[in-house]
Image (cartoon, rainbow, N blue to C red; front, side, top):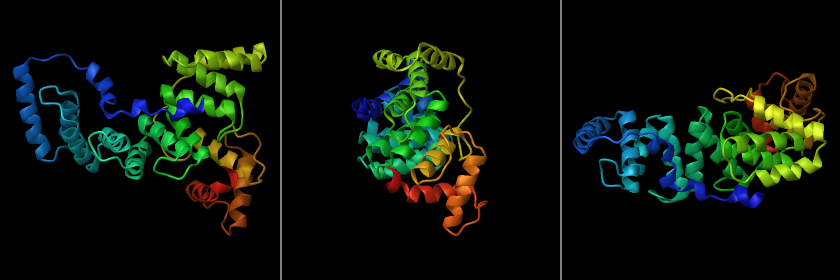
Length: 294
């Protein structure tokens, strides 16, 4: 299963725009040329949406000669202007090395910008980066956090990856019911590599537990954009990290409660900080100590 997670073919820059391209209706050639001309003028004037759209046109070759390098150049301009989707596309060019020189560390920084805004595909790519040490130091628990945020918003591959981590106990406590639920969601979303894994999990769970996992998946609803730190994947990360450092938080379920707050307070107190130092500070300190619980 880990080999599946490490597969990066889906990162090919030319495929990242497919969802955009298939939704576009064919337009007359003359109209395309006029539209591209206007878009060029707007993009040159610094309008970030036009820069992003022009990048997508150069990706597809629609109304222009297909050119990945030119596409990446426009994505970079829009990304620097704060366009979230362009930040993802520019990061993808850097990550894959198609249209731009491959630079994993730089790509991660751009994925992070859009991921912080709740971009689920960027969050998924950060999970991949931290799991496989691409441009960052390997941190499986932090990878699980990013996969969790993406999966919670309905990203099919993130749901599959999260299922693998739960099934194998990678960066998360082993939980076959959680794994079955996330695998089922991925399967419902069209993932093609799940059926065999679900069958294996079925053998490890009681019939009632397996049914419960599937029902949970069928009733599941995607969350709104996952941002910040007060969300279930991040709280689960804190609980897991604290537990590996010897603090009692109970099972890492991602639900904040008295035991979690008490453990965090103790962790901060030992480091000379008040218990109400804040979640951002607490997570930053846990990240620094992550080598102790990899």
